Image (cartoon, rainbow, N blue to C red; front, side):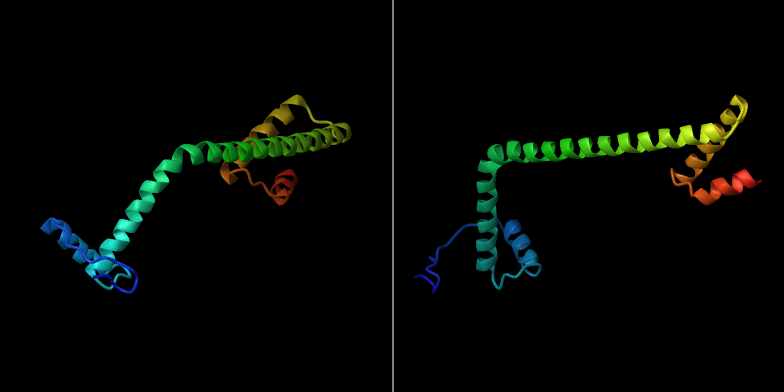
Length: 135
């Protein structure tokens, strides 16, 4: 006898422990009965088995997409770092042309900057530099 979905009624053998686990898990699902729970579990398992067949096809394709995105990101980061370096170099030359610091003063200031950058994890507000220079 079948139900309105074209199902077939059949008897199956399940280990008592497995059946107890099914009964305990039914409340955590949308299944309304043991039969529905077992059918859902079987459907899920079959879908999972089917996905295993495609893993050889999907994995290289996914790797290719990820590699392309990583390479693109690396190129963009490289361009940004290059542009920042150019602007920083320009700023250094402008400051060096307008100020007369001794090599010792520059070395001391570099150590101060290293300490500040370490303490602030790379975030150094301009106001901090102004305060340091005024003191």
